[in-house]
Image (cartoon, rainbow, N blue to C red):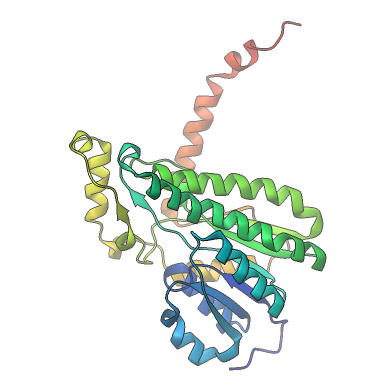
Length: 283
């Protein structure tokens, strides 16, 4: 399939493209005439798109918990052609009390949600800077702005990703590189069915942890309001804007939850104004 001729073809690098939002973004970019290098853990997941779009889709096998593999895939991609847009999309969540989580579960969450996007972002900064610009999109969630029981390691990764991105965006803006954090809400991507759980302990059964766990275990994703195809289109549209937002909040549930969290945080800050000033040296 050939690309439309009315605009320049751009090259995307998208992680976690085998399903959910990553696949929708991959398909939207290809349908719009762009090229995509998509990383997956199961190559057969994109076979239908490869048959449809031919050499405009390159599929790479990548395990984000193996940093050496990340570097090899990026080097191979950049040797092929420059990348215009990077999307750090891959992710999952471990559900359970912090006390219940194993060291391996915590480490894997941080490696996938934070370390891998940091390394991927870092790897693309120099080539983008030398070319005079580029876009990096970090897929966070409402969990990058709020905190809920059972998601402590997930929140650690997402909050860390948002702080990292905000800092880097200020470092590279002079080079024409723009970063955007996307914060989707509950979306029908199969994310809920892919949740991983800790071994439940009796101590937390009747607490907020146990109640949240049972709610998630019985979650009906058909009630989620987020349409991944519409999310993909909204994200794609920001890549056509010369000055995209640092944060892109998508979903009325996300807007409401983040608005409430920020309002509560600001109210708490206001109560500490005099205390904050009281620790300075006397004038």
